[in-house]
Length: 214
Image 1: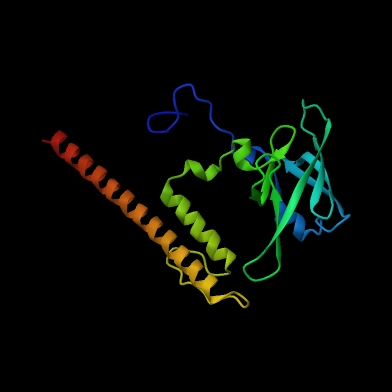
Image 2 (image 1 turned 45 degrees about the horizontal axis):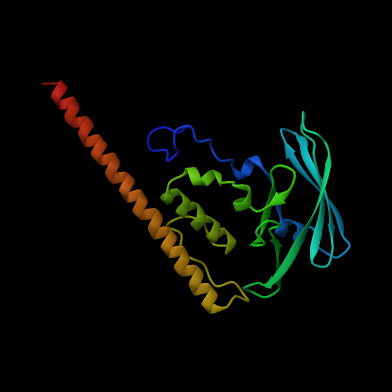
């Protein structure tokens, strides 16, 4: 609400979050076979048990054409067409990984967002993640768990790292191990700081109770 310590200036409007927009993930399209040249695919976004918006995605050699329509009540149901370029890079374990090139800034991104009439990346849309309202320790914990799940390892701050996946380079494996260790260390450090703050608050409360009881 923009109270003390929230970091928002008085009168400043809250920034829109990614869950309020319509995400289009190039990885999901690739898994669905929608990036094969000449493929045509219907993508839908649901909300509250109904279809919120839909798009017809037509794939070219190095781009996709998106015909987008917002189906919410009170919104002009005009079809907006947009072409977004696709670029492919070599993945860490081989194979080609597709990326969107943001239509506004031309950065490689996995997800573009429909917020308004056109799609572009999160930064160009001015969107923030819901997790940005969390403290740094919680963000580090979430990132550690995502990394563990991506590697197929048990998730948890005290879970042991698993074995190297077949086909992964040892250099990549040890880099991921180091990144995971840093995230766990950051999360643990913040947890210890919060515990110290809680202990100090408890000590002050006990002192106040003692004074009142005299």
